[in-house]
Image 1 (tube, one colour):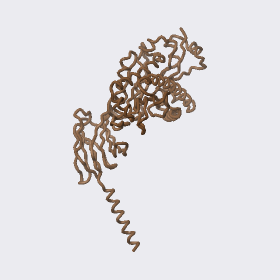
Image 2 (spheres, rainbow, N blue to C red; image 1 turned 120 degrees about the horizontal axis):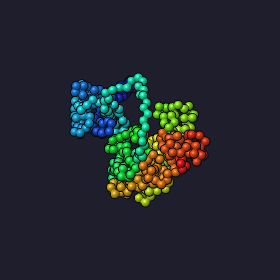
Image 3 (cartoon, rainbow, N blue to C red; image 1 turned 90 degrees about the vertical axis):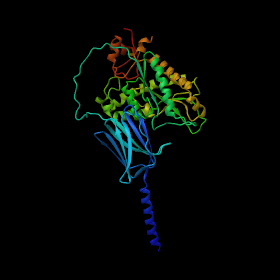
Image 4 (cartoon, helix red, strand yellow; image 1 turned 45 degrees about the vertical axis):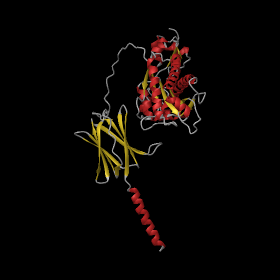
Length: 442
């Protein structure tokens, strides 16, 4: 009798498990995010779904099949100015699955994946749409003939990459009144960028221009592509204790720097030209590691000086959480060749500071303080090939920029390499990014 009860129990459990597994996926809503290089569709779902994504042509359409799923309400249509698609349709398929068809304005390359619950979001199905490139690169790259041109060098602007944290489906921290970090820091970042652009000899590059998410390492890539002289990431902190308050400024910790050096050396194709024009690919691992460490040491020192200037200017604006520059392993601070700082403008979890962060005048005060700190640094340490350096009275000092060599620096100032080496007690010709050289009179 006991054995029969066990068998019956197992059958019942199997039946219940089968019913649980067969429970349909509830597709609750559809949201859209538009970034410069792609558009994102986010389906809010009740559980992680099995799905397929494929393209149809003439006319171009994207098909998303979600297995064992049904809609709880009609899907939101895209905005008329959406660059990728014009209309979204849906219907049940095989009386069980859900098919979503997206009418496209042009061919795309789709990429889909599922996300697990995080913060205020539940399960999500994400479909990213990228522009479809017409040509594919295969095999070896064609070698282009090198052409040497004589160019009259013009003093350049100092480039500041301004990064507003979070964005899109990542709202960041949230204040007691519901203020989202991603919105506040974008407002401050835009104000900072405007101040930088008004300064002769300086130019801002906004890493994130709208409400969309950018991968943390891609933020670094955007700054490097812009040949930024400084990377500034703007955030608003949060803590479980609402009484905690104040601004902080961070640079990369030593442990974070060493781990990033290992990562760059592991990807040799990305490690070229990081150290004063020296190609690390051509070095053995030991020498490359030493050179990259020297480069990071100079970059970290420059970061520390910028951070100190910014923290000093933030002090009159409001309370400081820490009176000294802090160190952390933030991914966005890990570029080996760009001085980088992260500014926590305030604690959005503090009701008083949340209210200030919502105020446009206070946002402007924060932006101006960060700008003044950056400006004060570059007034003393402007790269020699910049307009700000040519306007400065400190012509006897040169800060090494990416790609420079001792030979090019000597040519720029019209002095000999031997004279520069003697003035700086240099044993060899090696220089590193961020290194400060005394320039003797010609």
